[in-house]
Image 1: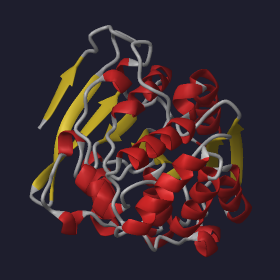
Image 2: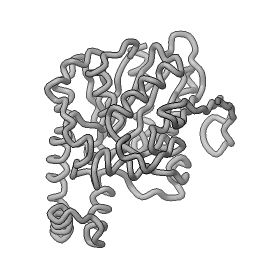
Image 3: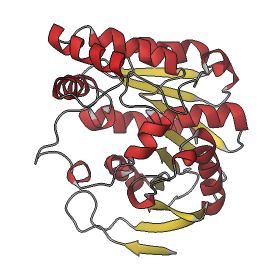
Image 4: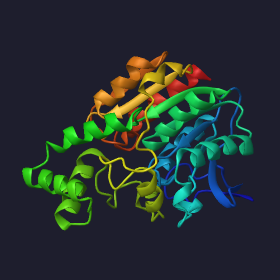
Length: 308
C-alpha cells in the first residue's frame, strides 16, 4: 500500500513529492519513504540507517538532494520505527536485514542505485556488496561505519581512555560484571556518546531529529550489544577487513574526526577498497551529514553525478 503526500512546510521544499508505503516481509511490514523522482540519467539514492534499531528519521536531512531530480529512498529496517517488531530475538541477525535489502530493491524496482550505509547500515552495505555481489550498484557511500567489530571495540576502548577516570572505572566495572544499569555507568556512557556520536537534540535541531521515534532496542541489544564498545550480539564476529578488496564499485568513505568511526577505522577501509575516496569531516562526530550539512550535501551531489 502506497500513499503520497506533500510536506507540511516545516522545513525544506514544500512542493516535493513524498511517497510512503509498506513492503510485506517475513509476515510483517517494512516501511519505506521515497522523496522526489528521478529525471534523465540520475540514479536514485538508497539510504541504510544505523543501529541496528535506529530509524530512517535522521536521513530526512537528505531530502534536499531530491531537488536535483534524483529520488531519495529510505526505510525503517525490520525491528524499528514504522517497521517495529518485538519479542522476536531470533530475527535480529544479518540474514534478516540482508534479505530485507534484497527484497526492497526488487519491490521498488531499483535496478540501478547509489547506496549509502551509515554506521550499522554501512556494515550491512559491506556485507551485501561482498557476499551477494549485487548488480546495478552505481556507487557505495560508507558513512561512519566499520569493517570489523573487533577493530571497532578496540577503538572505542581507546577513546574511553580520554574520559574522566571515574567514568572509565564505571564503564570497566559494568563490563566486568555484565550489568549495565548502574547510574555511574549510564552517566559515563552518555558522556561518551555525546563526545563521539551526537550532541543533545534541541529546539534548533532539524525537525526529523526532534520527532519522537520508536527505536528497536531489542534489535540493537540482540544484534549488537549493550553499548558501542561491547559487541556481544549476533554481529559480534562481523569481520570483513581482509575481504574489502572484493568491493569493486566506486566507494566514498566519510567520517568525522570525533566519530565513533575513528580515522583509523576509516583508513582501514580506504587502504583496502579499490577505487575508494575518503573525506574526513573535521568538525563532526557520528553524523557529519547533520553537523557539517552543507559540505556533506555538496560532496554527495558531486559524487553521485560523477558515478551516475
